[in-house]
Length: 252
Ligand SMILES: [Zn+2]
Image (cartoon, rainbow, N blue to C red):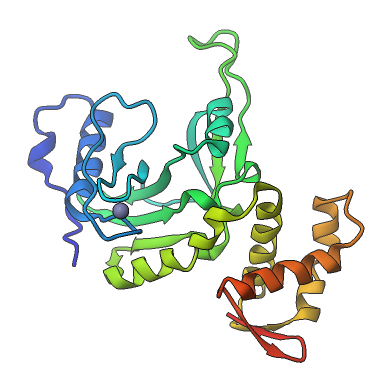
């Protein structure tokens, strides 16, 4: 079980508040968190890596951590928009940890596996004003609301740590998405979000058809939305994400 408190002695030598917080939050993760694929600890990357903060020596997976005070909210501010979009298609894309903290402890630690990131989830921010030091620079936000529930894996939620085996199992359930083709993945995630919106363990095909207009608005060139829904439900069934109980009934 995690000790959620920060080791505040680590920050004693740092003057700036942002540096102190960075040291406390990252060292907490090094000491406590584990790789969701294999359960190994996660050492720091060598300094000045452009992208990731941690990596798993066993499976070579990379992790980036963003932290903020108090609550996660609907969006998380990240770096440059263009490099974020480029990274989504690259092989060195990291998994993301989102941490919230209080004065002296971790409140939430949320993992979003890299295979859940598609362009839809990245919001382009307004370019910085001409008077800004980095005038014209364009940052991005990560939109948490566009990520299906199964892609939000909590190590710690509201001050309560999840058992390690639950985290590993929740991650395993999603790994089929790693191999999903980019063109179909958007559809898979869209259908997952529809299932989440129903907020129940069992649902009917008809209930998912209820999202036809919303999906059509998102994919205006596609005139076979119901076919696409059935195809995605079948895919999710084949991958063990849901079960088909017959007569148009599905269960998670
Ligand atoms: Zn690993």
